[in-house]
Image (spheres, one colour):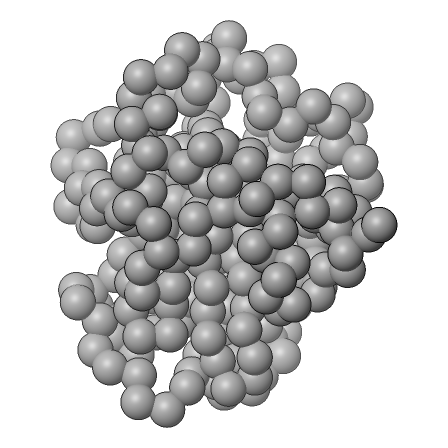
Length: 250
């Protein structure tokens, strides 16, 4: 059995929500290093709040049962001039190791026509769809990949290493594409990272599991949480149904 890292789900989940937030890329966005210009749009129910062509979309990729409450697992896409970037991949099926969480995968909601994938970390509910992307570069912190491959009960290793898996390992902060930056945010895992998207409408942070809730994020307990709070930016969390600018709590 895999020990799930989240001890409890502190708020009611709204599993029907599909969110889209639009944003304008900063001037001078250059070409991606690899990918397709044929952008996938995903499946979303709510209409986008448009600022321009560069759009961040949340997709419900799975649901888990935690302490009797349904907990959504969101992944995100970022429109980029040279292709679609997918952040985390949710789950496309289950395994006996996680059946105690009654997972409900939603593979139909995971966009497939992507130029590159980013994993905030490699816990099973964030990398379970990686297998959909053989040959596609999957960007991860080197520490995270090493821990996923070596630590007992850390994740489902068959979901990490699969035929055609093409991991690109990073050490520390890196500008992956113009306007898309990977920022280490340790705490939830030692190799956890967040994705910082710079736009004319302001910075957006795709936070993964830097915290389970915005209340937890506001505590600034971990180094990763403090780094996100310092950005004072609109932040998306994997298990929260709506993004917001987090407030630091005393």
